[in-house]
Length: 238
Image 1 (cartoon, rainbow, N blue to C red):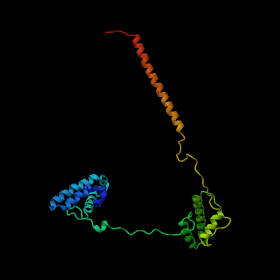
Image 2: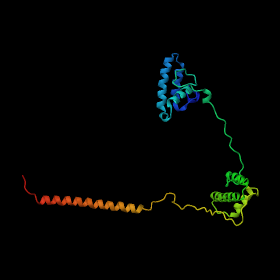
Image 3: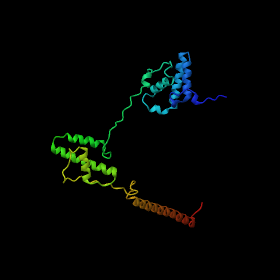
Image 4: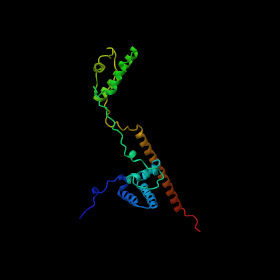
């Protein structure tokens, strides 16, 4: 007994439409009458749009369906399409892979941007502007160090790394203090702030609820009293 498995069948060109659509397209390609091919192709286009309703939100979704019809037929279907037939080379075009930059970073917790900034600062000729640039770089290096190491760091360590990365060309004066940066661990449960007036709102709801209950009981009691008075004083009967 021979079994028909998907592994032995022809590969699906567009799996989102399924094998039945591909078989129908193959049947259309085998028809000799072009009018019949056009009629059946329109039915298959409607079916493809029904199977993928999300394509209706895409601009020119009918154009996309007709392109998919040609792709499913392996560009062999001969029908009168309202859109130009897509190019097989354009469909199977694959862009060249983008090379991943292979760069060695001296201190990874500072990043490559710091090295680029240091190279730019080395090219500055104005002394005052260069000194301000170097101090900004040192402050950024300290912030990056604390961010990745989660610990305090001495200014001497930052200045030493700055001098090493700049090959001894950039330095700061000894009396310059860098921006103070501290890493603080957030307390537990601080991720979701709690409204300050939550208890007051609950109290207000309780007070409003008690008030409504009192009014409801008063209204009910008044109605009962009126009913009792009416029973005690039957009045005239006709």
